[in-house]
Image (cartoon, rainbow, N blue to C red):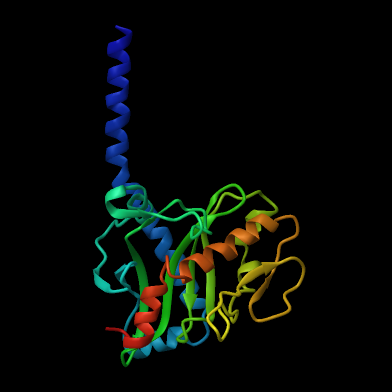
Length: 242
């Protein structure tokens, strides 16, 4: 009898989880869109460009991270984290390249784009990486030079309340616009420093949250590099919004 009850309970839990998953995906997507719209609204002059072009939201495309080629529009409900966990839709990262602490990386990823006359006006890249005690997920918006940060919006984290969790505060995220990621030679320079920033490649750290800040910087360096969106950004710079 106990076995039958356990089996029935397992079936019930599985059924509920399966039934709820589409709703959970929809809720996550709605929250992501809301944060992205808030980020776009906060960028000076961008709303005017969107109105001029007659668009109300960014174009979302899938990108093959290996080749950098843009593909068809993303299928509704595409889950990059789930794709990264599946060996059929991901690759294992070499230890020396895995500075974001991901283990595996999805083969295809989402990008969000706004273009005018075939040239990018804004590129928004979903990024994630290991913080001190959680995976941090964020939206990284790039200016047309594809190296200057237009905005960084943290969308998910579970860092220490009052310390690392402050990466989600408006005040800290307001420090990112205008920061540059790589120098003229292409070397990744972006970092979160202790104390106050002293160069265009630095962002003020949060007292007591050094490892969280380091995680954010490593996350950006990874996704901007050759194992992340690097091939896509190189192709975008050479070919424009093809």
